[in-house]
Image (cartoon, rainbow, N blue to C red; front, side, top):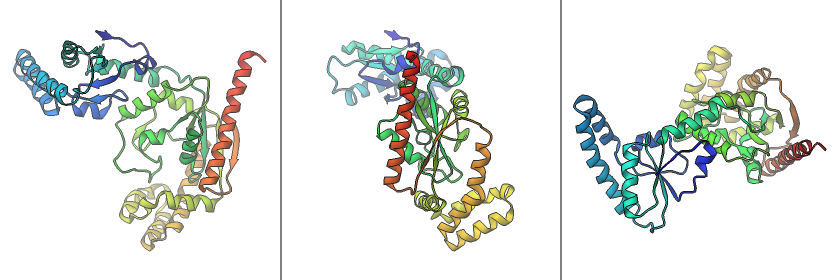
Length: 361
């Protein structure tokens, strides 16, 4: 049986025990339905071989070879990966477009007695729902941006708000990047499609009656681009500003970026291109501090010469409502937890005000 989903929320509450992506590992790595497991019925090389035969020799020969590979691989999955499931197991299966790969695998599962169903249109139908949510339909959630100069621990405070029960969209976490010039993380970033999938699915699971706290970002986080509907909503969203002393911000950044500040070659490569923006003299001073190994002084100069001016310039482009300012005397754990509690109280007050307005009180 093929299932059709009209909305992304419907897709995410499918009520099946397991979602199985039978596409190749390369296809799965680029993007997949959240929570899906990958049981490829054609691996990367097999898929390429079948595709080449289809184009260069004959569709019939390609289908014949492909069928043999699909059933052989499916049998291996049933014997080794799925043998522990009982007779009531109900999987949901998809491939690229809901065709032969998922259809064949689902047929085999149903012959065993499992209540397998296939996604009509496969991954492509899921991708259309993600695209519509981020490129076509305006974001329905009430976004509130968490803003502040570099080094005000916005990401950690955002995460603390989430731990306290707030509704949060952690874009830097989803992008696997700290959102700054020196923000690369080990392991690299997800694909653009994967990034968009995670954003769309996170929003689809959220309560529309409650505000969503989002860290103020540029239109790109590393190499990942914020989808247009989300970016438009963020540009006009009200803000809560964080403010902390310069010395506290500097100490925080020295600790948070210890890995990068310890890699002098990497620092030189990443900072040298800024000569076109900050002058040779300024960048030469940075290079001297790198050579001297003075992490605190380098951090302070980068804040003064680059990060703070860039932030103020970017902030000046968007005149949006400021809901309040949270002053942090320091940026230790206790300070961050207190700030998160303050922010959550402000978000809860917004929810209460919206409920009251809805009742006409």
